Length: 97
Image (cartoon, rainbow, N blue to C red; front, top):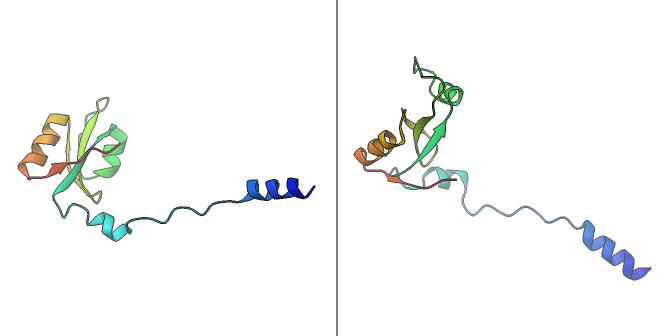
Protein backbone atom coordinates (compact mmCIF):
# COMPACT_ATOMS: atom_id res chain seq x y z
CA UNK A 1 0.00 0.00 0.00
CA UNK A 2 2.86 2.37 0.69
CA UNK A 3 3.93 2.40 -2.98
CA UNK A 4 0.39 3.26 -4.12
CA UNK A 5 0.11 6.23 -1.74
CA UNK A 6 3.36 7.72 -3.14
CA UNK A 7 2.01 7.51 -6.71
CA UNK A 8 -1.21 9.23 -5.64
CA UNK A 9 0.77 12.02 -3.98
CA UNK A 10 2.78 12.53 -7.17
CA UNK A 11 -0.38 12.82 -9.27
CA UNK A 12 -1.82 15.43 -6.89
CA UNK A 13 1.25 17.65 -7.10
CA UNK A 14 0.35 20.91 -8.82
CA UNK A 15 3.12 22.88 -10.41
CA UNK A 16 3.35 26.61 -9.81
CA UNK A 17 2.74 28.81 -12.85
CA UNK A 18 5.91 29.92 -14.63
CA UNK A 19 7.45 33.19 -13.50
CA UNK A 20 7.16 35.85 -16.22
CA UNK A 21 10.40 36.61 -18.00
CA UNK A 22 9.37 40.26 -18.51
CA UNK A 23 7.35 42.55 -16.32
CA UNK A 24 4.30 44.32 -17.78
CA UNK A 25 6.30 47.58 -17.77
CA UNK A 26 9.17 45.98 -19.67
CA UNK A 27 6.72 44.47 -22.16
CA UNK A 28 5.10 47.88 -22.73
CA UNK A 29 8.51 49.38 -23.54
CA UNK A 30 9.37 46.57 -25.96
CA UNK A 31 10.61 47.91 -29.24
CA UNK A 32 11.21 51.43 -27.96
CA UNK A 33 8.44 52.86 -30.12
CA UNK A 34 9.83 51.21 -33.25
CA UNK A 35 7.84 47.94 -33.28
CA UNK A 36 4.18 47.52 -34.21
CA UNK A 37 1.74 44.79 -35.16
CA UNK A 38 -1.37 44.60 -37.31
CA UNK A 39 -4.58 43.06 -35.99
CA UNK A 40 -7.59 42.06 -38.08
CA UNK A 41 -10.84 43.24 -36.49
CA UNK A 42 -14.55 42.95 -37.00
CA UNK A 43 -16.76 46.03 -37.26
CA UNK A 44 -17.84 45.65 -33.61
CA UNK A 45 -14.26 45.22 -32.31
CA UNK A 46 -13.12 48.29 -34.24
CA UNK A 47 -16.06 50.35 -33.00
CA UNK A 48 -15.19 49.44 -29.41
CA UNK A 49 -11.48 50.22 -29.82
CA UNK A 50 -11.99 53.38 -31.90
CA UNK A 51 -15.23 54.92 -30.52
CA UNK A 52 -14.54 58.36 -32.04
CA UNK A 53 -14.51 56.99 -35.60
CA UNK A 54 -17.93 57.31 -37.22
CA UNK A 55 -19.27 55.48 -40.24
CA UNK A 56 -17.23 52.30 -39.94
CA UNK A 57 -18.21 49.92 -42.75
CA UNK A 58 -19.99 46.76 -41.59
CA UNK A 59 -19.42 43.32 -43.06
CA UNK A 60 -15.72 43.69 -43.91
CA UNK A 61 -12.52 43.06 -42.03
CA UNK A 62 -10.75 46.12 -40.69
CA UNK A 63 -7.05 46.37 -39.88
CA UNK A 64 -5.66 48.12 -36.82
CA UNK A 65 -2.01 49.05 -36.48
CA UNK A 66 -0.91 48.84 -32.83
CA UNK A 67 2.28 49.87 -31.06
CA UNK A 68 4.14 47.03 -29.34
CA UNK A 69 2.50 47.99 -26.04
CA UNK A 70 -0.98 47.57 -27.57
CA UNK A 71 -1.74 51.25 -28.15
CA UNK A 72 -3.96 51.55 -31.26
CA UNK A 73 -2.34 53.79 -33.88
CA UNK A 74 -4.29 53.46 -37.15
CA UNK A 75 -7.51 51.84 -38.37
CA UNK A 76 -7.91 51.06 -42.06
CA UNK A 77 -9.87 48.83 -44.40
CA UNK A 78 -6.87 47.07 -45.98
CA UNK A 79 -3.81 45.24 -44.77
CA UNK A 80 -1.72 47.03 -47.39
CA UNK A 81 -2.74 50.45 -46.02
CA UNK A 82 -1.83 49.37 -42.47
CA UNK A 83 1.60 48.22 -43.70
CA UNK A 84 1.99 51.54 -45.53
CA UNK A 85 1.28 53.49 -42.35
CA UNK A 86 3.83 51.39 -40.45
CA UNK A 87 6.45 51.97 -43.12
CA UNK A 88 5.69 55.70 -43.22
CA UNK A 89 6.23 55.89 -39.47
CA UNK A 90 9.39 53.75 -39.78
CA UNK A 91 7.91 50.99 -37.63
CA UNK A 92 9.05 47.38 -37.80
CA UNK A 93 6.05 45.05 -38.12
CA UNK A 94 6.14 42.09 -35.75
CA UNK A 95 4.27 38.90 -36.52
CA UNK A 96 1.79 38.16 -33.73
CA UNK A 97 -0.43 35.09 -33.58
